[in-house]
Length: 517
Image (cartoon, rainbow, N blue to C red; front, side):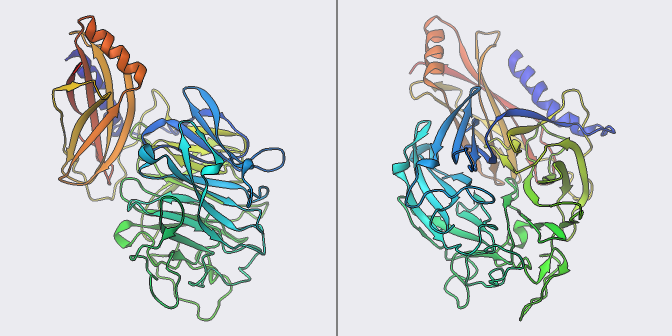
């Protein structure tokens, strides 16, 4: 039990640090992941947070491609410059803009990319199938194509699978200034929108019947939200399902909209453009709707007037190791290059502040499968991390919930290595995100052999969630050798749960003995 006790102490530090007062200086810092050519999006393998994927936009001498960083090495996962009919039109606001892995990627290898095409700038979402660490462009299957013929700017560009398993897509209003084609307020247009579709394996898609305009006139079946100018980046809170949209402004105001899952997470919402820029009248059209206060941006800030301004929307931090930012939404302005954060609230965000971290020309944010948050700049990608030794702030007041979730772990105490898998079952008494760690040990003294990748998963109240870890072939061989030499081999699981208010459970732990058959 000595190793388990040490794990409980180490994991418990993540909870204890939240009880201390915040120092004058911010405790978060940036850890460089690597250098890339025009990185514009970051994500990870859904089953392995340590396999990081960086989308490079392309343009000039730089090809549009997706790079894979794992184990300290960066390789090319997809070279999109090899695409044709159409190819990728890159440069300015165009190019390869984002990607999203299918929920069943581990089994199917399917993922999706968003790019602007050489066919007059049309917006494309295509399916590809990976084979190991590379992708053959011949596996491309078109999913949806949206004409964007007149201007090269305002393409949107975000792909994200939502908590409901559907694929969400952000599109710009068609470009130029002032939405000359009136797409933002036109619910029959697919531009200036967030769309929701169900991709069909092998290409194509269907529109979910729960979409707000499904089967209605007017209204396109694919539309989820409308009234957007250039929603370059949006995200869902991995814990609550709340929707956040960073919409780039015209010339005066930048905005971040927040729509909680309890209010529909954007379903049928009109975010105002081009009747409004932020909360301010822009150019009324007929009819110009009255925008409910819950749909006005939770946060707006003015263009400084001394140069360009463009909001880069981010994520709610659910990485329990970055306790000073836990539950806060991080974002930046591309040109200011200063990371900021706020506490989400309706109708107004709370405690908007600078984090004292500078990333010149911030292009985008990203989140991996373990909830760790990344920042992309003109040539580098950084992970937001806790500064060792720094103290953390107390939980944000005003949530009304001070009760910590109760977490339990259970597992079959003897498990076979034959399929290279070990598993544990977690349960909580309220909707929570559970961060789970696993380490393989040998001998009765529980000497550490290696760690398995951390997992973070959202678990509903009262449900048992079985979580499996798969050992790599080399790791399984190592375990078999140890057992063959007479050693006792165990997997030590430790976990902590966090609820929507940021309350942390006590740390739970369980040990599993590994056998050959």
